[in-house]
Amino acid sequence: MTIQRQYVLPNCSLILEGLSTDASNVLSILANAEFKFVGVEQTLSGGTEFFNALVGAVSAYCQRLISGFDHPEHLATQSSLVAVEPDEGQYHRLIVNPELLGNPAAAEEATPQTIKLSTVQLFDMAEAIDQFYADSQTLPEVAVDLAPLQRKYVRAAEPLAQRALPPLLGVGTLAAAALGLFFLPVPELAEPEVLEQQQDAALLEDSLGDTDAGDEPPAVTPEAPVVEIDESDEIDETPVDDLTITDNEQLIALQQQVQQQIDDAIDADFSSEQPLSYEISVAANGDIVAYNPVDTAALENLDSTPLPALTYIPVGDTAEATGPIAEFEVVFAPDGSFEVVSDQIVTAPVTPEVVAPDADEVEEAEDEEQSSIQIDGAEGAPSGDLSNTIASPIRDVDRIYELNQDLRRTIARNRNSERSGPAVRYRVRLDEAGNITGYEATDAVAERYVSDFNLASLVKSTAEDQRQLDFLVVIDNDNVVEVNPWDGWP
Image (cartoon, rainbow, N blue to C red; front, side, top):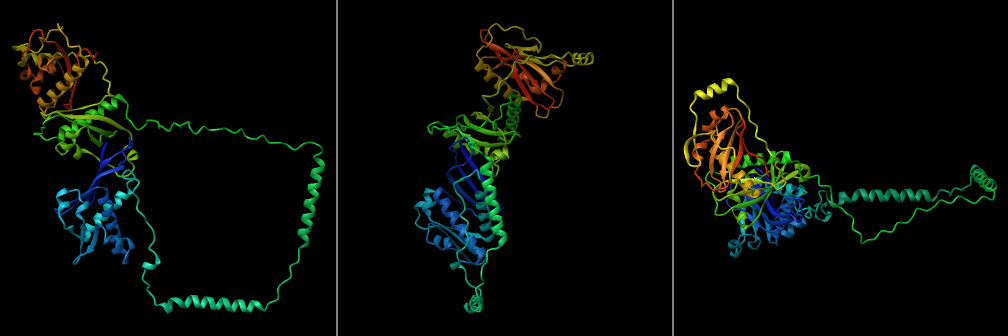
C-alpha cells in the first residue's frame, strides 16, 4: 500500500512516499523524498541514496554551526555527493550532485544543482529531518547516530602550561605522602578472641545437628520435569485483530461521513477518462488516515481527486494515534460521480414505515396543488398511482445493489441543497437500466416537499416487458439521503 508522510515547517516541508511490506502501515521502503522551500522555486527530490546523503550533510553542517567545531562527518561530506557551505551573510549554499536527483533532465547536466538558503530555511529543514527521525512509523531502520565529539576535534581554551599544572601538583603531593608513610612501622595483626569463640560455637552447632538427624536420609527435592521443545514447531504470533472496526452500524456511519467529506471537497468539474479506484483507511472519528491507488491510472490521477487534501497523516505510532480503522474503497466514475463501498457492511432488510398524517396536515395537503409525475410514460399522473405489484421484478442481488447506490447519488445530486424540513419518505420505481419510471409520496407531508427533489423531471418511460423494482427513499431533516429496496434486501 502506498504511504505518504509529511513534515511541514513554516519555511520547509519534507514529503516522503513509499510502500509498506505488511499491514502495519509502517513506511519501510522509500520510493521518493522531496524537499520544498518557501520562496524558492527549486525543489529537491530523489530516492534513498539522495535522501541519506542530504540528511547526513545537513545534520553535520548544522552541528558544526551550533557547536563551532569542525565535525568529522561534515568534513567528509564536503567531498561527497551532497555538500553544505557557508555563503555571504546569513545564507548557505546547498550543493547536490545531479546523479542523486530524481529529475532525469537534471541528471544529464554536468554542473551540480545549487540552492541558496537562509539560516531560517536551513534550520527548518533540519527540524523537518528531526521530526522524521522521531517518527517510528517511517523507515524505522534509519536511526540518527548520536555520539560525543572526540577530544581531538575540540580546541583547548587554556594554554598547555596552565592545563598541566593541576596534574603535576597532584603527582607531587602523592609522592610526598608516600615518602612520609615509608618511615612508619608496619602494624602487627592479631586475630581477635571474639572471632575464635564464634567459630567454635558454629562447629559445635554443626556437630549437634548431625547427631539429631539420626539415620534418616536427607530430604530430596524432586527436579522439575524437562520439557523438550521442537524447534520446527512455529509459535503462533498472530495478534488479536483488535485494530479493525467490524461493527456494522459504525461502518455505515463512517461510510456516510467519508462520502459527505468527499462530496464537499470534490471539484464540480471533476472528470476522468476511466474509473479511478482507491483503497482508504478511516479512523473511528472519520478521518482518512491512508489511501492506496488500486492501479496505475488511479496513481497518475491522484492529484485530481480530493483524497490527498482530506488525508490526515499522524506523527508517531500510527496505531496509538488513530486507534481502530475501517477499510473502504472509493471509486470515482468518469462523469464525476463517486461511491464509497465496503465488503464488510451488511445491510439488513428494511420494512417501509408509513406514518399516518394528522387531520390538519391532510387538509392542508389537499388544498395545495399536487405535483405531477410521469409513470411508465404517462405524464401528469399523481404520485400515488404506483401499482402495488410488479409483473417482472429485478432479482439479481448485484444489480439491485448497483441500482440502490445509483439512486442514492441521483437523489443527492438533484435535491435542493438548502432544503430544511421534516423527514420525508418516497417510493421510487426503477427499471433494470436504472431509469426512474415512477414514484409516490408515502404521506401528505412528503407530497408537500416533493418539488424539493425534482422527482417529476427524472421520470422516464420504459418498455412494458422491462424488469423493475421499488426502492424506499428517506431524506431526514438534515437533508441526508438513505435508500433501500422497498421489500428489503433479498
